[in-house]
Image (cartoon, rainbow, N blue to C red):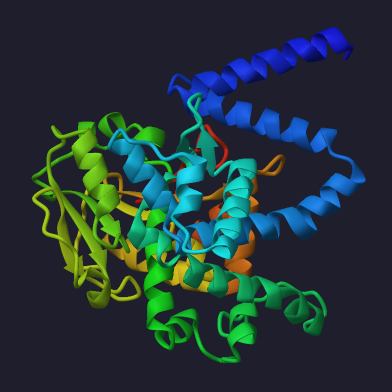
Length: 404
């Protein structure tokens, strides 16, 4: 590409950035494609030195500066001031430190946050929290950032030595992963490890809920009205949807809010200690159930499982699915798995990140379509269709039925 055309591309990118900053950027599939294209271009422009510097130095420094800013409550202070229409300047945030050494640290930290992009400066020079970093402006989330970071980084750091010791074979035992190696708790599950660190357990649980809250919603990937509501028969069952392992029912509630005219009961099931603090809802019933045991709800219109089976081995998934098989009415009940489906080509960075998270923490994996079909078939059920997420990063929906 010649200089003139490269300059035009640069101008278009600057215009796009301004539009996004003003809230007028593209959404959905186009937004994802633009992110992928920009990232691919960035990588193509990197030199060998750029790549090694990014991995060895820049990413760790970005991590630690975000953590320091969270510890110092900088994101919350900046976001609160912006919301109250008295935005803070760079100099004001620095001046809040008690002495010259602390002011020097704050100045260097703010420069790093601006360079890495979690803070921005507007045309007036005031600081604002970047939209992508707004989660860190929540004191409850930010206060536990370091606990999450320590927990995950310790496990990531232990993975290479674990794999080397096991002759570079993928872990298959959930009590013998990098996590147990990191915390010297071999033979214990991730839940056992977290029970020894209650504050970390709380932080980790909050993170899981946060990640789940920002994934695709069922009705965004699957036509709930046409595929479920149109065939709903209250004479068979008055239950429209059972969210198996659904925690506090956030996803079921999201569907009901988006489609308030849907008939039938919505039920979320999870273990007693999970639902103990669930807030009351008039949109979804919250009940206790262990999905390895007999399913008490018979012949609902739909069983729904979201981001749960990837926590379990193939054999465990077959057991869970068999319990649902027993409760499904042939030619009526549908089972919808809302999980990552790893593509054969060009997986997203989030998909492969989650795959290594599963390997590191649980000795499981994200599955390809072929792997999902095999696991489902072993349970006696049949995959009808896979509805792929259009952004290639969110979870897809796998529609399953029980044959007569």
